[in-house]
Amino acid sequence: MKKKIFLILLILTQFIMTGKAQKGYRPGYIITNDSVIIQGQIKLQSNIQNSKNCEFIESNQNVRNYTPDDIKGYRIEHSRYYVSKDVVIDSLKQRVFLEYLVHGIVDLFYYKDQNKEYYFIQKGNQLLMLSNTASLVTVKKNGKEGEYEETYLKNSNQYKRILQYIFQESPDVLKEIPTTSFDYRPLIKITKDYHKAVCKDNTCIDFTRSTFKSLDLEPSFGFINSWLGLKTSKNYTSNIKPYFGLLLRLKPFKSYTMWNFLTGLNYSSNDFHGDYDNTLYDGYHQKYHINTEYSVLSIPLTVDYSFPFEKLQPFVSMSYNNVLILKAKYSAQRIDNYYPLDSPFRVYQFGVSLGLGLRYILENKSYFFLKNDFGYRIPGANFGYVLDNTRVYSDLITIGYGIKIK
Image (cartoon, rainbow, N blue to C red; front, side, top):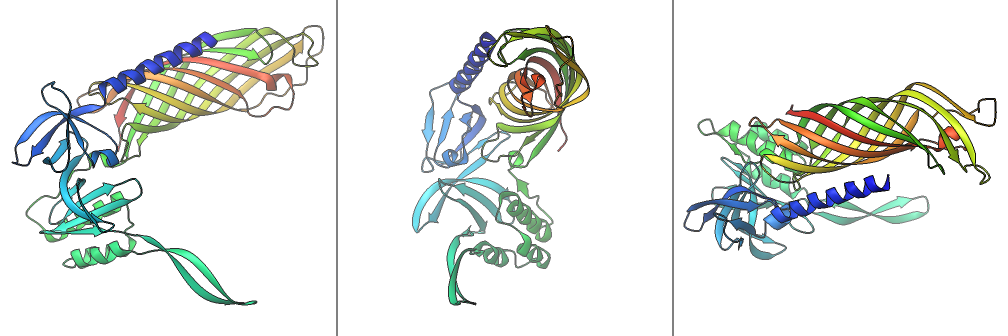
């Protein structure tokens, strides 16, 4: 078992090192200060790093770093678009790469530093910063014991006043402002709504395809090889059973698009029969005969990282698994004792698993995947009964198909 864990960790390390060697470059282009477009490969980083510099490779040459002073902007295909702008933040004028969110009658931009998020809106030649800075406010109140002071945080809502000024030509859009929160998607939505309300000739361009939450459906099937062990015992019994899964894959992060979250339902079964020599009680060697047959319904909570390659994407995952035991038949008996032991079987179990796999991206953005998971689970409670001390290890190989549903 230890060899299996070591092998999986070794393979995971190799994937990570491979991903680092490739550095996450994607097809894209830069726009020079002379408005010349140069095609190449651009590194997709966090928004904080992408706003400072552009790591660019042209025709397999060496990496070159461009600052906002060097180029007008750059675009990573199917991901993000950055433009160089002069802005004032905390009374300091600086030139940075702003993420271009929406282009229309008004333009919307996004910027993030180590501490805060900023949005900028441009109408004509006027570029204004949207903010919602929180400040401490002290209010005097009267209580039973006399006057006292209460301090709380209050947002400035400055961005709403700016939006009212920018969107004043559209009464319908003005009604949306009070309920528009200071966040990525609400600000993108109201900017696009304004364009649709006042412009009938030109299309509003949304550059943020990858910033919307993406939802994929992943049906899968495979085989799971499971081992049942008993705490303090070196004996294991195993079986191989079919496995079926139906998961939802969510891409919720605008700054780190390669991180995904998955959940859903997985179904399999177990059938264990064996003898286990152990020292569970009083340190003496005892042998138990255990029979268990049941179905397994698992609800995983999975974090998944996909390495940023175009067609073949390696990925690694870590899961916390909630396991429900269905239709359980079980018994436990000491070999030197004629009577069966009174040992309940927990219908809830939990565990963790590590996985690695490979995804093949199709032209329509659907994909096939092959994955190997190594898991470990235990009963949800342990009150000292024999079956409370069981351990199940598993090695799962699945093949599946993913299709975007949102």
